[in-house]
Length: 275
Image (cartoon, rainbow, N blue to C red; front, side, top):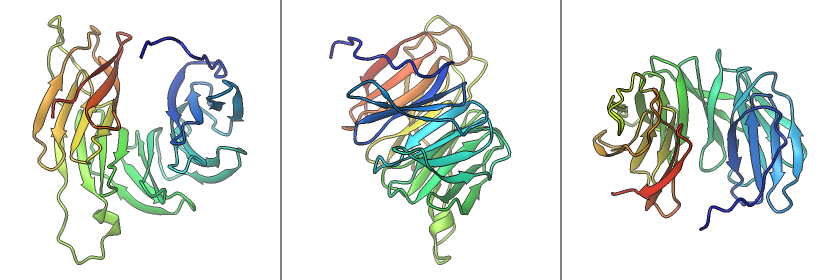
């Protein structure tokens, strides 16, 4: 690994706010302030499709696991599911009353979970847009949502610094199971490496470990906690920004051994997950 620049994709006319690599590794989708989603061919570096049906900034893009469909959401309050090869719109979901900040597919591509400024996470059928369940356990705008790899639980993080872990039996149960437990985790305030006191602990992103046991959540730092107990396991504080939100993005490596985190100081850091 050298960090050498391989390609530049210049199609978005304003700031890029979100991107996602297709599971088959052939395409990248990017969305941004211009309200456009560009689909890029990784091999040629050329744009293979421009999707422009959002009326405002696009905050989230997510590929289906079969790499055929893209779900995109943004400031127009909609989530749109469309064919990545043709741009044909399949579903336009209008269930939210605020900006859509994050979208994620269930592991079997049957459902989509979308998070919004309206303080809800909504589950709906990917093929039809039929609403299935609204999780309203947050008390502030929900910035991020992620489905566990085993498909059994959802993690969502909000502006106030709370991460909720809640089970899909809320909407898939047959009524015979006992009421499932929601695990709540608070992203606590702390100091950065230079003694700066962070004034905001809004959760910007969450990521699951490959075994669906641990969650990494990011605000001013990266905190790993046990999703079953809510117990904090480790806090990573190597990002220095001198602002209220040092870390913006996090991803777990496929082998579960490393975490990559991106900060406002302009670095991506890869580190041992220490579990």
